[in-house]
Amino acid sequence: MLRKLYDWVMRQAQRPDALWILCVVSFAESSFFPIPPDPFLLLMALSSRSRALIYGVLCTLSSVVGGILGYYIGYALFEAIGMKILTTYQYVDAFQTLIQHFQEWAFWAITLKGLTPIPYKIVTIASGVAHVDFLTFMMASILARGMRFMTISILCWYFGDPVRLFIEKYLGLLFVAILALLIGGFVVLKYL
Image 1 (cartoon, rainbow, N blue to C red):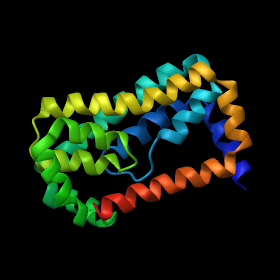
Image 2 (cartoon, rainbow, N blue to C red; image 1 turned 30 degrees about the horizontal axis):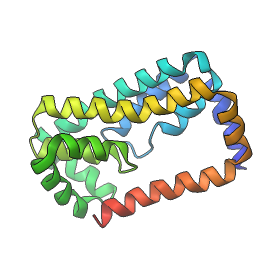
Image 3 (cartoon, rainbow, N blue to C red; image 1 turned 60 degrees about the vertical axis):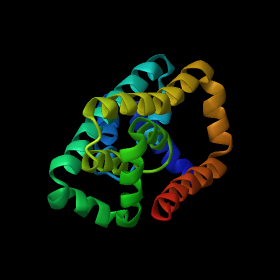
C-alpha cells in the first residue's frame, strides 16, 4: 500500500500543476494547514532534478508568504481565527511557552523552531501574538524555511538517483521515521 502511495505521489509530482500544489501546501502549512510540504518537495525534486533548486526556492517563498498570513492572524485576528486554529490542533497549552520564547529570543526562537518538526503555523501565529518585530520575523523565517527546504532540494539535485533509490529501498522504514518525527514534534510542542 505504501509503495502504491509513493508511486502515485511521484506521478503527481510530474504533473504540470504540481508546482502550484507545492506552493499552495507550503503557503497553507505556514498559517493553518496541518500537512508539511517537505515530502512533496522531496518527491518533486527527485522526479525532476534539473528543477530541484527552483522547487526549493518556490517552496521557501510560499512558506514565508504563508507565514506572513500566520503572523497577521496572531497579530490582528487571534481571537477570531488564531485561537480556533490552536484549539483545533490542541496547541493551546504549548502556545504560551512559545510566546515567552519569542519575547525573549525572537530571531533565534523563530529560526530554530522553523527548522524543527514543530508545525510552523504555531510559530507564525505566536510571533504575531508576541508582536515580534516584523523585519526580525521575516529574516528568521527566510533563514529557517530556506535552510529547511533548500537542504532537501540541494541534496536531491546533487545526489539524485542514489537518494531516490535509497527512499525506494527503505520506504517503509523512512515512512515510520517521518511519522515518528511528526508525532514527536506534536508531543514536544504539547509538553514543551
